[in-house]
Amino acid sequence: MQQPLWAPWRMEFIRAEKPTGCIFCQFPEAPPAEDRRNLLVHRSARAFTVLNRFPYNSGHVMVIPRAHLAELGALGAEDWADLQEELRRATAVVREVYRPDGLNVGMNLGRIAGAGIVDHLHWHVVPRWAGDNNFMPVLADTRVVVEALDEAWQRLAAGFAAVGWK
Image (tube, rainbow, N blue to C red; front, side, top):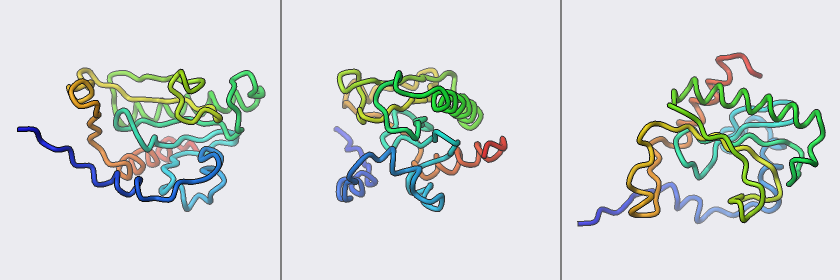
């Protein structure tokens, strides 16, 4: 007998009004009081880290420059340096908070390469554990993520705060 998958949080997304414009530009412009709602866990001068709303694994974050650019070569030296420092911080915090066996760190440039938001660069940091690629993606084209996004936000925001990265 086949068991249905229950994901009631998806209905909120389905019914929600979709934002206009670039959400990656909107997140850091919102006041810090909205960071939890936006899943933004850390801000630097020129970049920020946000949880992926559709994660591959628990703790999947994206590190995003504030500059709205689609090409790596278009980033100036200061934007690039801050983005890489934010990526370094994010990988350290994800390792500390989640204790994964490894990490995937990557950037999809262009729709054909898998970018869901093609007009705004972003790094993906995905925690990985031995055996985490369970049978669900093969049998049901579904991933099982065992942690709610709000819980992940709490853990990661506390992780950035614990090491003193403001």
